[in-house]
Image (cartoon, rainbow, N blue to C red; front, side):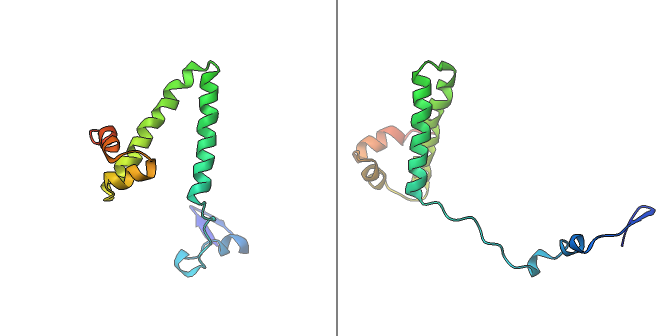
Length: 108
């Protein structure tokens, strides 16, 4: 029984069972891991669909589409801050080290 001000409240057994300490309960399984290549393929499809929508005359969506460039720049800069070289990044992108450096070295 719990007192709510001057009115006692009786909890059903199922409500009382929910008030357990998290440290004592079994860990729940997390969601399945999505593989990077699967997620990347999904992302490409979404971006391509967005580009098709803009290309058919939805000029209002153009700023959102071009904002993806900023997100991609942040990904490259994040790799640099993790210690990856321009050469490692360029190799994955199929461009020269110099091209990668020119494109992202001065990014904020």
